[in-house]
Amino acid sequence: MPPPTVLAMALSVLASLTLFGMPTGLLVAAVAAPMAAKVVGRLESSAVRRRRNRIASQLPGAIDLLIAVLDAGRPPVDAFTLVARAASDPLGAELALIAGRLSVAGDEQSVWEGMGTKAEFAALGRSFRRAGRSGMPVGRILGRLADELRRERRTNSQERARSVAVMTAAPLGVCFLPAFFLVGIVPTIFGAFLALPL
Image (cartoon, rainbow, N blue to C red; front, side):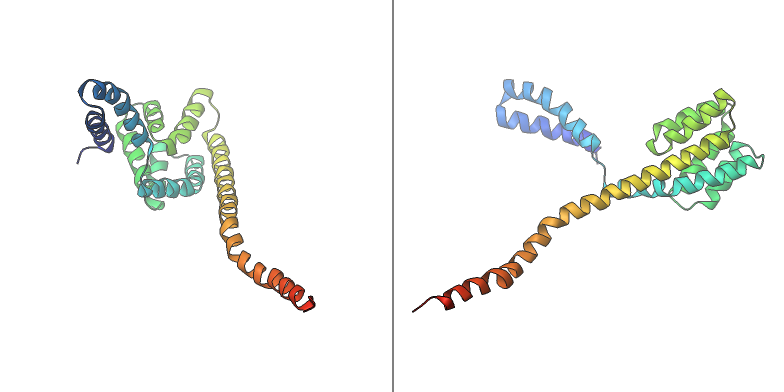
């Protein structure tokens, strides 16, 4: 199977040529194909989203473990190896890859820069780079990062809870409307009819 972006571009070119004919269809395809590739490229599957959310939820605890191992005087490669064994997948597998790169690379800075290619680990790589440049203890910088990630996760959870409350307001209103009509309005109308002189 071709990648989704290539498939989206091919389908947009085919649709443009089919709908508009040869000369105009090529012009429309020249605009539509890159736009389709950009839109499809931004979409992510539910499996990718679940994996990213699991890593985000596990990362603050893993950073705490990294701090403990680094404060014990172990080098970063050992810290990542030990935490990768302790963490469950998918985070454990990602940390094992970082440990493997650290054991092979001659320069740790290149590994920290390479962590920026994955959004989940970009802040972690920046923290190690900052500690290397400034000479600050890496544990202090990583502690701030773990606190920030926890705060961000808590804020995201609260926002999701608020959005669920907003989305459920309309269906609940629709459910309660018939009951309100039967309990509040029908007896009033029925009472008014009974009170009329015949």
